[in-house]
Length: 480
Image: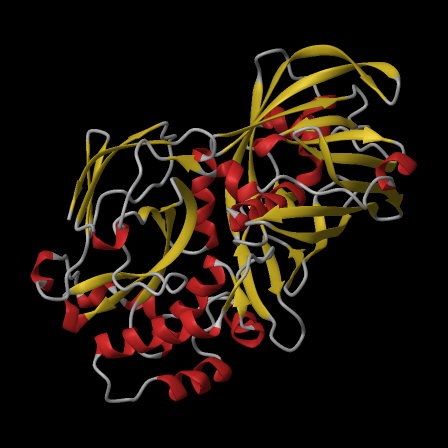
């Protein structure tokens, strides 16, 4: 849940390629749409202040300059942490993106992404100068800044019921995702003590619904999103006031799903059968390996090292992608490989390597929520993290050891509820194929209450967005 929340901030704030249609292109290029000046907003959660946002638009000789600073105090898993998000960008005269810088920071971890557009390529640099990773992304169209989506749609010529679809570029996951904005109509609302006429917009991002009210001149007056979080235009003085007591409710608790019945001794269960309701369209991986999904009913069978023939081993030729390093799973980094050599021996069988790696990560990482984009190298250096940090570090170790590995995400049972969670899957030849592993709980295989919806890193975990607040689980059978 923490990772999803962090990614949503990145999606909302940074690069946006231009709309698909010619009508949308005309809308976005209206010169008067960008509201020049400084704007402040209160951020609240269920009516309680949790932070503020400051936006600046200014004109330059070459176009526009945009910046946004966000400060929040976020409660996750009972721990309150400050979160800062800073975005700066230079825009061309037609408001296409020239370059941007995105910084996200909390107590221990910091995430930085910088990007520049050259022709039809967007070069993104992730991390600091010493450990920088570079990705080059091909662009079908010139990219736009995500912060201008609402302004463009609110001030443009949309008619009630009419909408536009925008593909959003997310610097944290290096993915593009569609956002659908629909004009619902116009409403009178009171902002800063004055009655304002505003356009009411619906924003649909992968099934997650958000409502926004925008001035005819294009400036955003109010936004309402998931988990009861809202932003509303206020004065500078009001935005900066009351920060001492600002703190959200526990976002992980709010997003969790009640269980239809208690589960005792989850680690001893061999089979769990549940009915899923509220699934939105998405790229969910419900059927495969230890999970069978038929007609809304999901059956999960715990892997057995005694009878590995019951599992799907997969073809060795399909495993290359699960051995490669990525910008966040740096399995080729010398520090990862050096520590790996201290944990496993070169002659260890696959299963023994996996046992040692899961045990080391479980023992040596402090279990603590982290508000950032998970990074294996930083996790190794800081030795602290939640499920996401455990998962990327274990994946990096496994790949460096020659074990195909990936991250899985979904929900897990705890204290009468199902919480959003991430863990790993490792391909172990001597144990029959893919085996789940949870380094946070020290489990391999993981218990059957680990319900997988997606497999992959942050780009795939964004698919969980549409489940929040909608997913329902009914337990049908439990077999020991």
